[in-house]
Length: 281
Image 1 (spheres, one colour):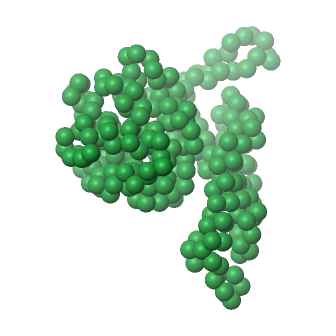
Image 2 (cartoon, one colour):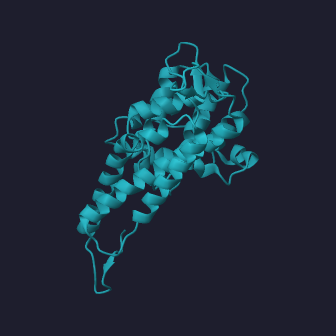
Image 3 (cartoon, helix red, strand yellow):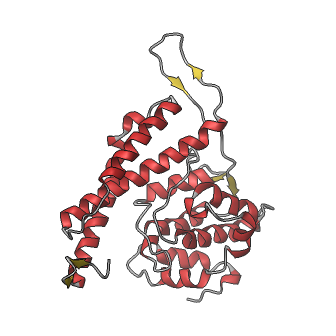
């Protein structure tokens, strides 16, 4: 968005570019929050095949309206951000449903009455047990709320609240004290960018903190990333295991530059406990 041209005559100034970017992000964040209410009938549909059809229709509707004719109008950029959020959420929901369907157990009818709903229970995902301080693991992963601001990530916000990050952790891990609520595993379709850089750091740090207290290998942590986030769709397990810590320095430095983030200091504080990271005060 740094080189927007109108009618090939003149370049839009940086202040206007920033205003357009802000409108797009505002629309995206509000669309993320509004999404469940707009498609609740599909999300609650117990018939997974019908749910896929409803989502396909909704995705096509969003795709048909997600276009830009070249007019740099703030209200237009806001609308595009709003629709983009719908599209991201719906595509993620569709992917989650498709992953459940091949392993879907027999439906359980709760009553002989024909009007009673059918409940489909998805299979359990094998979470990694946490034997390290859960509070510190949580404080580490909360950086995901602000991770999109890190230059190496170069994307838009995906996790907009602490509650969403806690839900993610409840999908990936389990702890003895029950501080993490168990959540059904789902697949995240991430927007363009390099979210794998922050995810690699968080997962590798979790592995290093946790590994002294159990014998779970790094491969399982890597597989968890591949099974959960679209940015690893073309990544092989062995490659991820070998390179998960490769770009640690850049992302750590970028986190330290997020001086206005309420989470960055806690992340650095926890990372200092990992000797090989060599992070100084």
